[in-house]
Image (cartoon, rainbow, N blue to C red):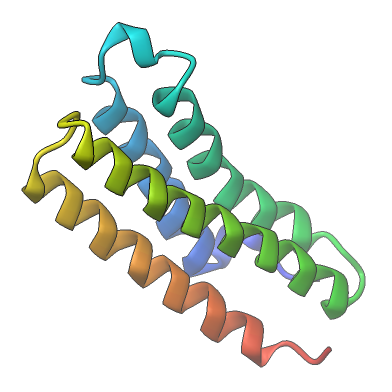
Length: 117
């Protein structure tokens, strides 16, 4: 079992989730149940799945939860691009968020590759 609070991937994805909440707070009210909700749920899913997976007894189970976290990362990437297309975020905000999610993807992928499954 891993101590999720000590994992850099959990710490970084937790901070990123807060950043997504801040970013989406400027979205139109009409998106409250659309992209705002989707981005927030997907961003919370990343550290949540890392935490839940870390409680599993087998590394195979943990890897499955890391894969779910990766899926949420790619979901966020797509939703950020759509948010930019709709002019909800500017290019600087888009690039900053995309750079961060790409780093998180790399970290999760690298960590997952170290598991003995």
